[in-house]
Image 1 (tube, rainbow, N blue to C red):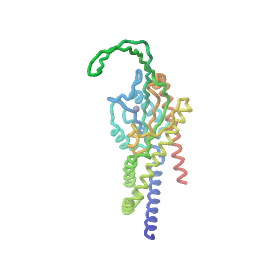
Image 2 (image 1 turned 180 degrees about the vertical axis):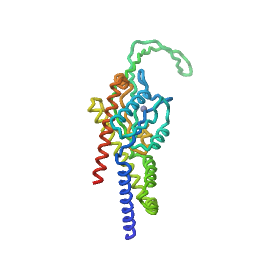
Image 3 (image 1 turned 120 degrees about the vertical axis):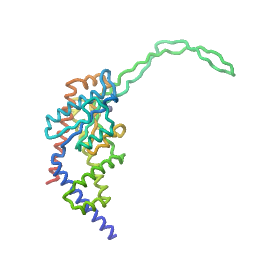
Image 4 (image 1 turned 135 degrees about the horizontal axis):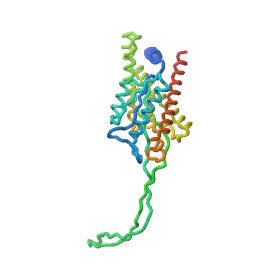
Length: 311
Ligand SMILES: [Zn+2]
């Protein structure tokens, strides 16, 4: 019992030391909290993504991403922007994650366009005779039947608007594995803590796993807050918002980067009206304004949080 209490006390001491160091390190090395943003234009090269009537998701995503980088550099000059691609090339999601992690980004934003399948409908436009061969009691015979003639029409889906995704962290340990590497990084950087203390921290598994949990939660909370802000700003700008959502399928890259990550579906390329909007100068400007404004709000809230924590 006494021993258990001792272990608990020891763990808590280490924990507060670690958190204290981590916060200190964070405030000291990262006073702006948002120094580098990685923008990832979806698809590219051999992977065009979804197709519109005349444009591809890869091309639209690249155009919006390039513009977004300019918008951010212009209105948040103390933030650095890195693009995972600037031309029409294919990067696997593994490469994209590597680029983002190597650049040590503080935020990862994927730009995509959405797509919905057209609805299929058919109407009877007449009849025709069709001859079948049927087998009855071992004998083959031909039967003629009247069958309807259909006209099939595909109507483009009316789905339109924006949605922003974050990775569903609750269901996956992968994010924790990734955050684990970030923790190793933090441990390496703790020069103000003595060698012996670092060894103790590393040896104390409960502390380390708590730390990983904390980082994972932090990424998740930050991503969620930005996703909500982006959709809120899209609404204020008059777009139809399909809200911020959690997803796991098809967004592996969001889990593989060691930073808060969101994926913005900027509109439906499958919807003729949205496709025109996505390809227009005004449409792209509006999307970039909304995302830049949201990043500003996100950055301000992080800075206020740090200030409050420091007081
Ligand atoms: Zn996509």
